[in-house]
Structure formats: C-alpha cells, structure tokens
Length: 238
Image (cartoon, rainbow, N blue to C red; front, side):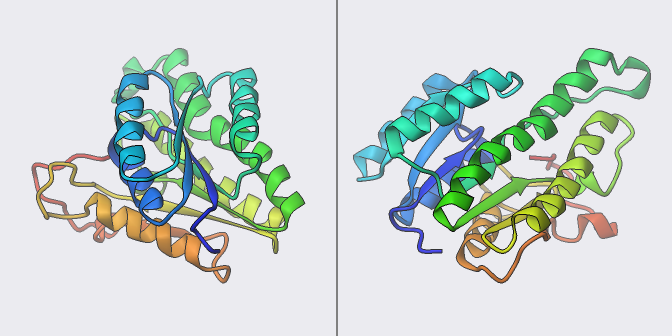
C-alpha cells in the first residue's frame, strides 16, 4: 500500500505505543484520525505538534465500549476524511486482578475494550475498505494472548480472542483487505535502548502496511519472551 495520502485510524493514539505509531504514520505522509477516550488534552497536544511539522491529524473522542460511540466515531471520520484505508486497533486496558478479586465488571470492561471494540471498528472499517478495493487492519495483540499470567486472566483471554479475530477477519476479507496482528512482549517505554522499544513496534507496523503478501499473521515482537527469555528486570508490559 502507498502510505502517503492514505487515511488511518489509530485507536488509543494519544499515549505510549499508540502515540509512537501515530508519529510513525504521520512521518510517512499518512493522514491520521487519532482516537482517544480520557486523554483528550494529551491527544490534542500531540496533534498540534504533528500539525506544526506539516502532518494531517484530527482528534476524535469516543468510548469504544459503546457501539453508538463507535458508529459516531466512524461517521466523524467520514465527514472529515471521506474514507479509511488503515485501521490500527490499539486501544486496550491492562489491569492486574488476582483471580479471587476478579469481578464481573473487570471481566466485562476488559473484553469490551480489548476484543469487542476491535470487532466493531473492524466491521465498520471493512465496509469502507471492501468498497474501495483495498485496506489494512492491524490489531495490537500481546504475548499475553499465548502466555497466561495468573493475575491477568481477563486480559489474557481478551488478547487470545484478538489473535483469533485477526485470523478470522483475514480469511473473511481476503483478498481485498489484509488483517494482521502485532504482539508486543515487554516494551521499554523509558527511552533507554534495552529490550523491545516502541520503534521495534512501529517498524513491525510499517512492514505489515507495506506488503499485501502477509495476512492472518501475528507478528511477535517480544525478544523471545514467549519462549521463556526474560526481559530486563525494570520493564513491564506496554
């Protein structure tokens, strides 16, 4: 896919890996719909910075747990940009809950944000992509989707489901739309070069956007964490 001039939606794009991916896309001439929920000031500051450098960025706010707000998000994108070529399902929640403390609300919120919302966004995006004859969907999974953590069972299940959603969508939308996932391990957000960095994730994103030959894959960017290799002791999941 030719990136320059393409339209991308990045959910949860205001901070952390989301912001890194927004920056990488804008640097390549992509026009970005930057979604946020509770981080509007941070999102606006990032958008202003990128616009000052010549980027095209529009901030949209939506609670992705609410289907009506997802619909409104896409309607807003259509009014502003007219179409969508790239969807990056990045928004997620990651909260520690030991099994005895895991509540129905914890379970429902995590599945709503991490799995149901990507499904809703992909459904809306796919309609546009199929109609125009091209598109890319990238889901941000996690090594936790294949490696369980005792105090994050709800998160593990949501990311395992996202990996399967990726494969199912890839098959259903082929050959027009390519659907892949990136599964980070423990990402170093401290700015030092140890372990997996945000730049490693953005390179994976740009690779998957650059080729039509890969679909239905989950690209693990985890420095071997799922194989049992340990990250630096001071790092935590992204």
